[in-house]
Length: 172
Image (cartoon, rainbow, N blue to C red; front, top):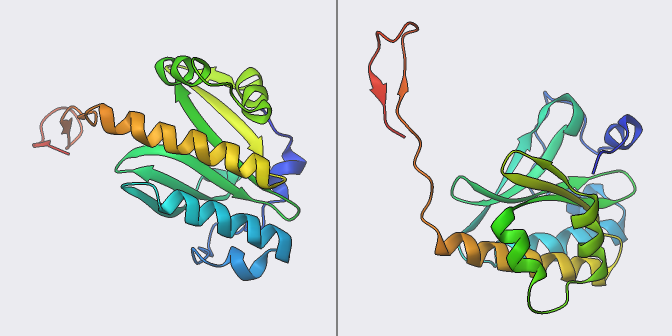
Protein backbone atom coordinates (compact mmCIF):
# COMPACT_ATOMS: atom_id res chain seq x y z
CA UNK A 1 0.00 0.00 0.00
CA UNK A 2 2.89 2.36 0.68
CA UNK A 3 3.54 4.86 -2.11
CA UNK A 4 6.76 6.73 -2.74
CA UNK A 5 7.21 10.41 -1.94
CA UNK A 6 7.55 11.01 -5.71
CA UNK A 7 4.09 9.50 -6.18
CA UNK A 8 2.51 11.78 -3.57
CA UNK A 9 4.29 14.85 -4.99
CA UNK A 10 2.48 14.18 -8.28
CA UNK A 11 -0.83 15.15 -6.62
CA UNK A 12 -2.59 17.63 -8.86
CA UNK A 13 -3.35 19.86 -5.88
CA UNK A 14 -0.32 20.40 -3.63
CA UNK A 15 -0.96 23.76 -1.97
CA UNK A 16 -2.55 23.45 1.45
CA UNK A 17 -3.68 27.08 1.14
CA UNK A 18 -5.77 26.62 -2.01
CA UNK A 19 -8.78 24.34 -1.58
CA UNK A 20 -9.82 22.88 -4.93
CA UNK A 21 -13.42 23.10 -6.03
CA UNK A 22 -15.06 19.63 -5.90
CA UNK A 23 -15.61 19.71 -9.68
CA UNK A 24 -12.14 21.13 -10.52
CA UNK A 25 -10.66 17.79 -11.70
CA UNK A 26 -13.21 17.71 -14.51
CA UNK A 27 -11.32 20.58 -16.15
CA UNK A 28 -7.87 20.31 -14.53
CA UNK A 29 -7.15 16.68 -15.46
CA UNK A 30 -6.31 15.44 -18.95
CA UNK A 31 -9.55 14.39 -20.71
CA UNK A 32 -9.19 10.60 -20.19
CA UNK A 33 -8.42 11.10 -16.47
CA UNK A 34 -11.23 13.64 -16.12
CA UNK A 35 -13.61 11.04 -17.56
CA UNK A 36 -12.44 8.44 -15.02
CA UNK A 37 -12.98 10.96 -12.23
CA UNK A 38 -16.46 11.79 -13.55
CA UNK A 39 -17.48 8.12 -13.66
CA UNK A 40 -16.13 7.49 -10.16
CA UNK A 41 -17.62 10.62 -8.65
CA UNK A 42 -21.06 10.04 -10.16
CA UNK A 43 -20.98 6.36 -9.20
CA UNK A 44 -20.04 7.12 -5.59
CA UNK A 45 -22.54 9.96 -5.18
CA UNK A 46 -25.36 7.72 -6.47
CA UNK A 47 -24.84 5.36 -3.53
CA UNK A 48 -27.39 5.89 -0.73
CA UNK A 49 -26.29 8.50 1.80
CA UNK A 50 -22.80 9.03 0.34
CA UNK A 51 -21.43 12.56 0.53
CA UNK A 52 -18.31 14.15 -0.90
CA UNK A 53 -15.79 16.37 0.87
CA UNK A 54 -12.55 17.78 -0.48
CA UNK A 55 -10.04 17.53 2.38
CA UNK A 56 -6.43 18.42 2.91
CA UNK A 57 -5.01 15.18 4.31
CA UNK A 58 -1.61 16.45 5.40
CA UNK A 59 1.76 16.94 3.75
CA UNK A 60 1.87 13.42 2.32
CA UNK A 61 -1.56 12.88 0.75
CA UNK A 62 -2.23 16.59 0.13
CA UNK A 63 -5.79 17.14 -1.18
CA UNK A 64 -8.09 14.13 -1.54
CA UNK A 65 -11.74 13.69 -2.40
CA UNK A 66 -13.28 11.91 0.57
CA UNK A 67 -16.52 9.94 0.26
CA UNK A 68 -18.44 8.75 3.28
CA UNK A 69 -21.75 8.03 4.91
CA UNK A 70 -21.96 10.46 7.79
CA UNK A 71 -18.65 10.25 9.62
CA UNK A 72 -17.91 6.73 8.27
CA UNK A 73 -15.52 6.75 5.35
CA UNK A 74 -15.99 4.81 2.12
CA UNK A 75 -12.86 5.95 0.25
CA UNK A 76 -10.50 8.73 -0.76
CA UNK A 77 -9.80 9.59 -4.40
CA UNK A 78 -6.28 10.75 -5.21
CA UNK A 79 -6.06 12.99 -8.26
CA UNK A 80 -2.54 12.76 -9.57
CA UNK A 81 -0.98 14.39 -12.61
CA UNK A 82 -1.01 11.08 -14.52
CA UNK A 83 -3.58 8.93 -12.71
CA UNK A 84 -6.74 8.73 -10.68
CA UNK A 85 -6.33 6.37 -7.71
CA UNK A 86 -8.27 5.36 -4.62
CA UNK A 87 -7.57 4.38 -1.04
CA UNK A 88 -10.27 2.45 0.79
CA UNK A 89 -10.48 0.70 4.14
CA UNK A 90 -12.07 -2.58 5.11
CA UNK A 91 -12.67 -4.03 8.56
CA UNK A 92 -11.94 -7.72 9.16
CA UNK A 93 -15.65 -8.40 8.81
CA UNK A 94 -15.92 -6.42 5.56
CA UNK A 95 -12.90 -8.19 4.08
CA UNK A 96 -14.28 -11.60 5.07
CA UNK A 97 -17.66 -10.81 3.51
CA UNK A 98 -16.03 -9.46 0.37
CA UNK A 99 -13.90 -12.53 -0.24
CA UNK A 100 -16.71 -15.04 0.46
CA UNK A 101 -19.29 -15.75 -2.18
CA UNK A 102 -18.79 -14.32 -5.65
CA UNK A 103 -15.29 -14.10 -7.05
CA UNK A 104 -13.46 -10.85 -6.33
CA UNK A 105 -12.04 -9.00 -9.34
CA UNK A 106 -8.28 -9.45 -9.75
CA UNK A 107 -7.48 -5.77 -9.14
CA UNK A 108 -9.42 -5.86 -5.87
CA UNK A 109 -7.78 -9.14 -4.79
CA UNK A 110 -4.36 -7.59 -5.42
CA UNK A 111 -5.31 -4.45 -3.44
CA UNK A 112 -6.38 -6.68 -0.53
CA UNK A 113 -3.12 -8.67 -0.60
CA UNK A 114 -1.03 -5.49 -0.75
CA UNK A 115 -3.14 -3.64 1.84
CA UNK A 116 -1.72 -2.68 5.21
CA UNK A 117 -3.54 -3.39 8.45
CA UNK A 118 -3.56 -0.54 10.95
CA UNK A 119 -5.57 -1.35 14.03
CA UNK A 120 -9.05 -2.55 13.15
CA UNK A 121 -8.89 -1.76 9.41
CA UNK A 122 -6.92 -2.68 6.32
CA UNK A 123 -5.88 0.25 4.11
CA UNK A 124 -5.97 -0.66 0.42
CA UNK A 125 -4.76 1.37 -2.56
CA UNK A 126 -5.91 0.85 -6.13
CA UNK A 127 -4.85 2.49 -9.37
CA UNK A 128 -7.95 3.11 -11.48
CA UNK A 129 -6.44 2.78 -14.93
CA UNK A 130 -9.43 1.56 -16.93
CA UNK A 131 -13.19 1.02 -16.87
CA UNK A 132 -12.87 -2.53 -15.49
CA UNK A 133 -10.92 -1.37 -12.44
CA UNK A 134 -13.38 1.49 -11.90
CA UNK A 135 -16.37 -0.86 -12.10
CA UNK A 136 -14.68 -3.36 -9.76
CA UNK A 137 -14.01 -0.61 -7.22
CA UNK A 138 -17.52 0.84 -7.46
CA UNK A 139 -18.85 -2.65 -6.73
CA UNK A 140 -16.72 -2.79 -3.55
CA UNK A 141 -17.89 0.72 -2.59
CA UNK A 142 -21.54 -0.26 -3.12
CA UNK A 143 -21.12 -3.32 -0.90
CA UNK A 144 -19.30 -1.30 1.78
CA UNK A 145 -22.14 1.25 1.87
CA UNK A 146 -24.65 -1.62 2.25
CA UNK A 147 -22.62 -3.05 5.14
CA UNK A 148 -22.39 0.35 6.81
CA UNK A 149 -26.18 0.63 6.63
CA UNK A 150 -26.48 -2.67 8.53
CA UNK A 151 -24.46 -1.39 11.50
CA UNK A 152 -25.41 1.48 13.75
CA UNK A 153 -23.10 4.46 13.50
CA UNK A 154 -20.50 4.41 16.27
CA UNK A 155 -21.08 6.89 19.07
CA UNK A 156 -18.18 8.87 20.39
CA UNK A 157 -17.63 9.16 24.08
CA UNK A 158 -18.09 12.70 25.38
CA UNK A 159 -14.90 14.77 25.30
CA UNK A 160 -13.87 17.02 28.13
CA UNK A 161 -12.86 20.59 27.40
CA UNK A 162 -10.85 22.96 29.52
CA UNK A 163 -7.67 21.00 29.96
CA UNK A 164 -7.35 19.14 33.24
CA UNK A 165 -10.82 17.64 33.27
CA UNK A 166 -12.45 20.78 34.64
CA UNK A 167 -14.61 21.68 31.64
CA UNK A 168 -18.04 20.70 30.44
CA UNK A 169 -18.58 17.51 28.45
CA UNK A 170 -19.40 17.75 24.78
CA UNK A 171 -21.73 15.23 23.20
CA UNK A 172 -21.13 14.64 19.50
